[in-house]
Length: 364
Ligand code: F6R
Image 1: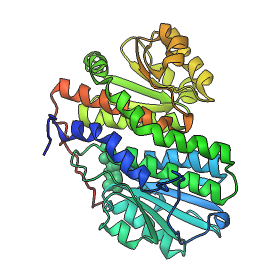
Image 2: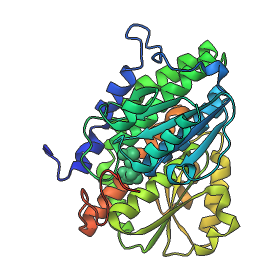
Image 3: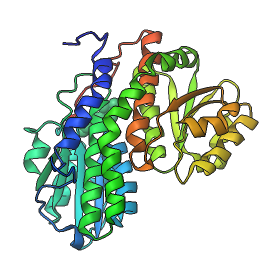
Image 4: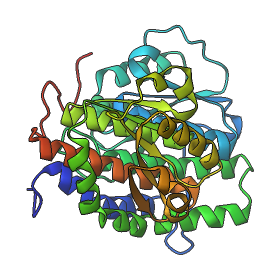
């Protein structure tokens, strides 16, 4: 049941500290907390390229995974949408592996993409929440997300546990490829260990975020922007908002704004800026100022130092805990979920069962 919660989606958002802890612990050595991957059907040192393929929210987890595998493990990753990948003649290279991410493990396009790649002789690694699913059964190896059953149609805890699993995969791949010095490894391990507690702090902002949602619900269009892994969180935030509140929402890489989308900006279009203080913060900050200069209303998601620097430009701010930029996408997923959830509840839509959508898309 829903326990004390009004909707499954709310329950599942609030379960995230627990299920992230479970998922992360499943990869950690209990004594040393060192992240260890199970035996895989390929050697990361011999992998030349990864095709990361999924649909919807799971594809945004893959996009974060791409940034992590590239920066941490030095592995080239092609990010793809399953419905495009499966019909495209993408040449595969020796040493290529496939990475397929799915909550249900039954998504038709993701399954077909995996079958296509395996048919070409590439090993497939699946990140799946439902262990008895077709994807899990057919993959050469499976990493399980321990989100537990996800009932709400809008994916929340499945997404963040996918991210946690991909973070562990990136750490394991980086170590296998000799690219992880012990100091960096210790910092990443600590950041992951502390993540459930940090997410709990974000959940304490629930009513503050609800107050912003009360203003957002009047908007006809909302833009989400970010750079790096925050671009993927912007995409996820926009998908969450449109699918449950029916407000038109789009996400852009912040650097793309001036190539067209900035023409949309006026005082009626809120812009959600996902801006943890990482190496791209100053770049995002100047995009934020460009939006404000054109009358845009900015909702800034950042940490205390980021809000201190940019808060004066923003219409609304949410101050999030300071974390290692590596885990920031997992943390910043939560406020965009809450923003969408509260906006939809305030608008009175059917949050757990949005119109026209099914939990598992088993037809293409
Ligand atoms: C959005 C959402 C969908 C799914 C997508 C893939 O909230 O839930 O975009 O992420 O349909 O589903 P799975 O992960 O089951 O393959």
